[in-house]
Picture 1 (spheres, rainbow, N blue to C red):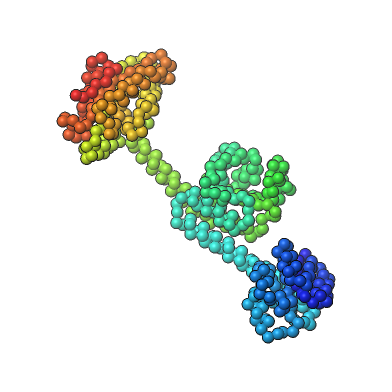
Picture 2: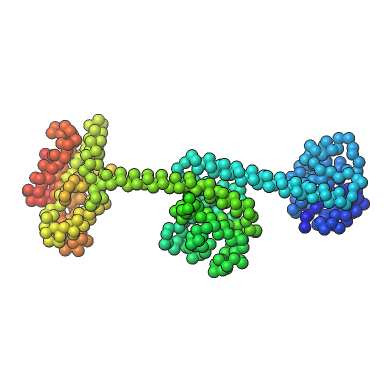
Length: 464
């Protein structure tokens, strides 16, 4: 039933006009004092407002009465300037006495239809603008998260919802991951238990949109109805995001709202958004995958396959950089070369497989006890090199002793604590008269290490 408000200071006319509209099955509230009419309009939802003119055009009331509700002016007989003033105030429709009941009914019907057309056009404009914004963004970025967040944010701006999220489900998993939600760009990587979200599970199985018009009556939601009802959720949409015939990373757009079900045009808008963004998301995922592969292969190119430490290729590049910096700024640079003592015995006693495990554990032990600024690499076999930037000979010696201490006292899991290890270390520091090139550091450190191993092992020898 449509709700109509009438303001008319003429009590007799107000009474007859109110009776006329009530006979036509409208909910009518009449007021002969404009202050009371304004209070009622503020506190209730009106579909049509009738105003007696020119009384209803008092300046102090116009800003309060004008809005999205159609206003119809009631004119006794046209007075000069009244209609012009009414148009300026936003009143575009009038009834002029004498009028018939049919004329009033047609005028109300016309105003309501006009209002509906205007609202539809405004809604379509809003949808179109959101789609243009989304299309513009997705064509200008390859950041998948940026696209996902923008999509859910735009949907929430256009459609009143209490939840709007992008959800990823990995094949065979019992959990889903919220990768973007409209509340905040920081809210991501949240985990959902799929047994609490049967609508997502249904969309995952059927690979088609799932529309829950009423969570209290839809059979899909039977098992979780008691959990969802207190949250005030009325309707839910779950849309798989397709690229051609493939669900992109099993990605779902899930929106929920309270109060009423989603309308057909709202559902269509969400579908259009999902379809519009699918191609861009697919490209973004491919780009990120290729970038991730580049990083992985780049890391492999500079990483020792067994220990995960830097390899000699990376070591020589960094040595050149650090040596150039040390020479340019007259800073010290120390090179430590370490060798596990009697490592051959480990291989002979426990086998090469255990020997490899020992090397891995030894590498992680060194990594744990060096400084963040130090550069650790596997040089080959059981030999390791540590570059200590901005470290003098006086500072290098205690560092080498500290490492020897940790190695000696470490119980290697691979050897089940039955065999302790030690290491010999050769140390050389730039500047030195015998060091003219970066490679000289390696050569002299190797010489010092050779001396350490041939004068008793488990020793530190500092060149010269």
